[in-house]
Image (cartoon, rainbow, N blue to C red; front, side, top):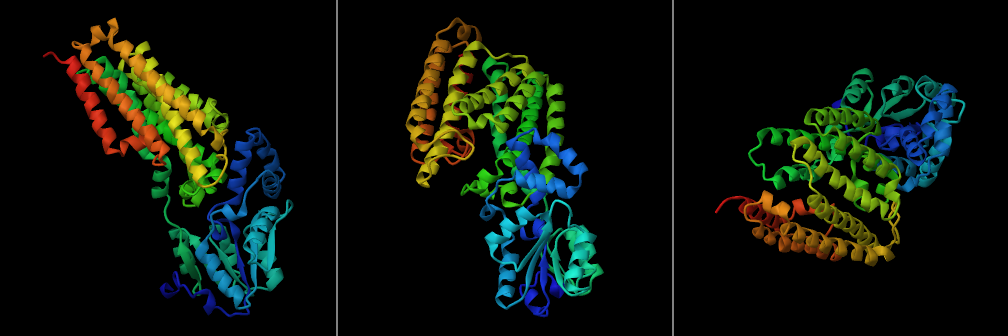
Length: 487
């Protein structure tokens, strides 16, 4: 059996007169068309969620037909099993009959088949019959006779078809299913096994984005309460809560942006867009992460801030990211809520001075993010970003907005340094003047990097990987601590 495992010429060794029948979801496609269409319907109109149960009550074939009618997709951008398709093309060139037979709706299967120009025939669900398991096996027996075909699938329900096939073939199957197929069928062929979900899931959680949640520690830092151990513990709990909730939102965001990500030269490699991570895994992880975040938020005392963050993030993911200017103010607000969460957790609330300064800084960072995206699509000779309300002609005005916010933050900081509030917190507030050139230099450098096309990530993530930013942040800490410590 093992010599048939992952054999590059496995299909060519099969009797050339034997037709090869192949499944679509998880086999030709590295994703599931039903899950894709359901997600697309929900994010285009959330009310579709309430229609799914009545459609399903009329039969799964009806559900698939209704969802397929609402799924606008580009077949060429869907993640495909390139190695399998290459082998099928070789067999097609040898004159072998290749049939696509799938439980997916016919409208979906036909569009994908037309794009591939590979199949001699397409057999699919039609709104009345759901071709899955034994029903699919019966259709193939009627069409080609018992053991008159080879069948390629990737799901446990395909055992019903493999039992009727002359050559059972599993492609992109999980390890457990591959072992089961090899054990049950002496002539079985395994064409590649699906990788596990753990690594793609960790990638989808975007742990590198958790660096943003360090803002939770800012109220504790600016208050000068460095020795308050309880405040540190609660602040770290709040930071973990934001990490869990943010990762849940990132999963939802990637699911909502599947078509846009697949059209993007870099984002098409994200786990959901590339097919490395199943949609069902993401939908399971989202509520688990949300519950974890809620528990940590309650434990830390930052429940209100985390709840507001979740609500704003969901609104942003569902609709507000498409509204020009509204989106950048929402992004700035999400940064600010991390400060409030840190204040709630530590007991050192955010001052109006910190609120004013950070609001301008965060607005500038949000504008950096949008301008960098526009510069990238401009270099690709495109006009607008998918699911965003901007065009390349907006670059200059957004840069003006962002530059103004950058220098406004410096003005607020200079006024704070001269205020009575600074004198009550810091022993040597005059030393804080060193912060102004540091913050201005850092933000101006971000804008210069953006203009030159170097900003490929969120600006905070970019800064976390930038050695110059680390030096600036170290200097900020030295200045702030020196202003607090007695000489």
